[in-house]
Length: 192
Image 1 (cartoon, one colour):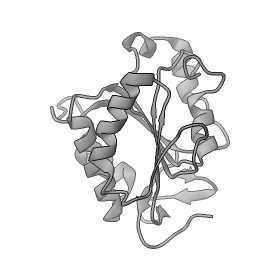
Image 2: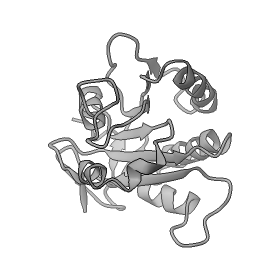
Image 3: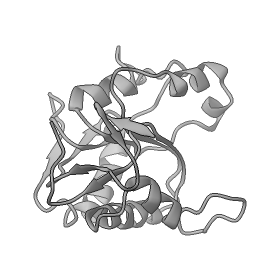
Image 4: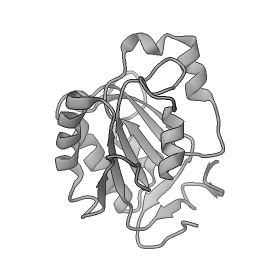
């Protein structure tokens, strides 16, 4: 079992987020803006007007997409804060590094430690290795649609990206850390 905030979640007792909001935070300049525009088009009708673009301040949200490069420490390149700091600051329970990280970062032991570092804020985190073109937006659109239909994030993730040696070719390459566990979207709210 994992925790979403202070609530222990299971597939039968998920953390339900009613009317979830999505925020985009571009810390990667022009490259990030192009990716953000693509992702916004893919997801705008799923979040039905509950999309925020971070400019000078990070908006509160349930789902956070960040466009940036990461350092081995987990710090956002060129900033004094970490990816985990951004997640907690936004109050997000789902966070996606939506720009591809550098492949060499994966073999860096310091980066591995930063991914495993637990904090007082739990979120399901996705680190993107390969967006795989338009398949990135399609994948997250399907994931969030399944979550709106009541399927929890881990269950929807495994359905779309079965774990094992034979991965579908129409999904992005990612690492997903389900620290908050079973989260779904729906009409019933268990947010505090």
